[in-house]
Image 1 (cartoon, rainbow, N blue to C red):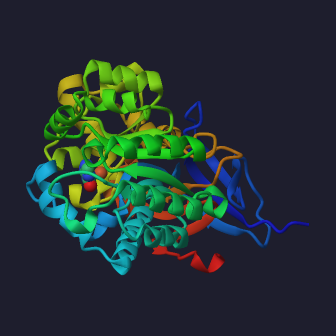
Image 2: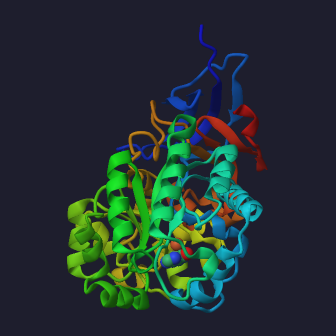
Length: 428
Ligand code: GUN
Ligand code: FE
């Protein structure tokens, strides 16, 4: 008989985010990495790990579709700068100063913050060097991730330490891909990470396109975040940013574009037609004065959007509760109170984020057969006002805070329990 690791969560409120978006009350059974049942009463075996869910709310783990773990140590460095000045004077010199140990520690610190805030999957962009150390931290922590070395073989004002040649950028990326893609039953996946069009030669981008097709992996880049950025792209290429990416042949279902604040109608049509995914980063877009992305219009068009905190320096935290709240609030003055309602926002943070990483069959909702990636919340604090019977999804989006997350489970492993982090590195 095969010995299964079983976890039973008893007597909890469960926000499933399945097709019916059911909210149930009952038990949840996990066997090894997957959910076996959601709702029916489970009689635990003596060997089972039992978590009392009484008065607790179980949700699908958050999926952050744009993060830079390598920037966690630079928290607070956005000050009052806009994107291009901030990159040139702060972020690029700081990234150039990283060594192996600082990359590893930056990743661990970021992952700890993410897991303790209920995030279970990230799409991460590293810096030019030492990405192997970031993968090591991802492997040891248990978080689910798509990550990749940043690629930047072009550009002015880039410190010597970040400058790279096209060929070595490609070679190092492929070496990392071959080492890490598929690790731990596909918990870790490689995603090519050309920084943004400004930083990349056409030769690099076309090679990335071919390699991503060859290995069937994602490409993750910044696009149309800032007006200064898109002006440089137009100057360099003679095209709008997204038109250029489409011209290269990169626009497709395995492309995640962070930000997308400044898009023409034609660019939105390309994103829609090609099935490209957008990572909305409201906190970063506000802090760097980038602008307000046209999210309600993109949703109306049927474009898929996830949510991301971006790097810690952009808005000083990696907190999905913060991003959800901002995403919900910023459109209300112009588009009305329900344009971005709490359910829509919660979908972006969970099941739509799962679609963005091509894993909606596996994560993003709590259903039998899916991976056990979830967070257990205690929404009984005064700030959540539980006694007034508000809808739990509204309560999570508008009132909950990171410390309301009590436990986090990823791939059927308890990575945080009662706010105590657990390292899983011994299991490998
Ligand atoms: N565009 C190019 N690089 C970056 C980065 O590191 N952060 C953000 N927010 N935008 C970028
Ligand atoms: Fe970013």
